[in-house]
Length: 457
Image (cartoon, rainbow, N blue to C red; front, top):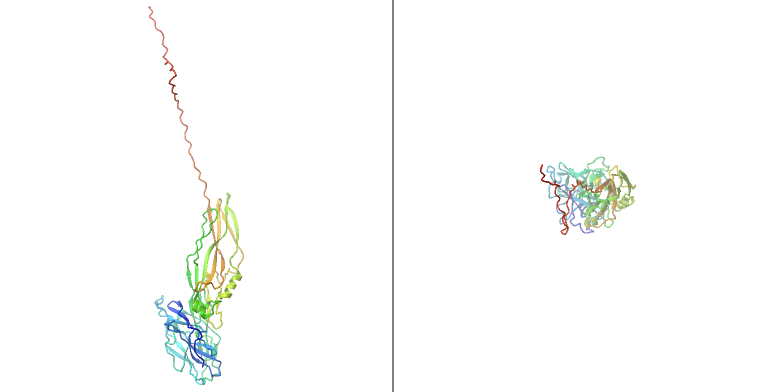
């Protein structure tokens, strides 16, 4: 029997993932329950996740873990554990996120194997409306405690597929048969992450199950929306610089296990950056401007280069594992199994319409009325992935949205014409000039009178 001594320090308290009233966190601490040491079967070890009560109070395993080989997995392997949130579900009809099983059903026990220690494997029987995400082991042949595991409300999980077999007891000499498997998440829907808890499920035969109820956790990618920049308004004959902001318009919060960080291994990611922020900043880029000084409408044309580069996006995806317009999956050996996909609004690409690979220039045409100026703009989105401490994981990249064309026109003011009314001609007036003081005045004329004489008749 090998030792259980942890190899690395336990994970300290980290920010949990919240799904309604369910909290998801992670542990690297395990208790060895049993292994195949001394048996002729293929080597394997069975473990119980043991979240530290000081760092993860109230958290429960979702099932036990089986690994190939006898090596100590403490500090090396990470699995999900769950806790009931303090705040109830947003839907009062749904009830608690977690319930303990009603009972257990025996799958296998090691009787006849000759093992120095006993082991039995049990399938939890969940309450109605809940599902079990894994099986539970016991270090004897008695049922485990009902508090050994928690079942999850059915609307918080998604039906999943079955992995390749992890281990079976062939050669052990046990009177019963058992094979162990794990869940494989289905293709994620846009804006979602599907996560396998890391536990296993057992079957009492060696045949791959054709249909067996297997489930993964269904998480939503947190998306924070801020105000987008306002379209520029042309206020003169030539455009001025458009307003820009340092705040991202969209921020997608991605759990650590969905990111490949070139600086840290998985367990260090969990410690240092439980979440990564993929930021998108939008800004209006001037394509061209012109002025129509003629008397008729005029057509102006510009050719706008696209910001996206296939090599830049390929480098980003190779470095971080994140895909645009497609899902991405587990990228490291023996890591948590997941599938994830960003939403269409964030990535600006649909399943059947992806312009990220289109680097042809965008042709812009504007019809401008007489005596008007025009400016044409397109929106450019700049993407950056940052850690919890604000440092960038790798170089960012950009995208030009060909459907975001914005045209603004400005009409020059017409010169103001002042109309002055024509006044009527002033009437003529005769004015006698005054005489000088030393000028003698002429005698006044008197009417001509006939002389009268007295003549006798």
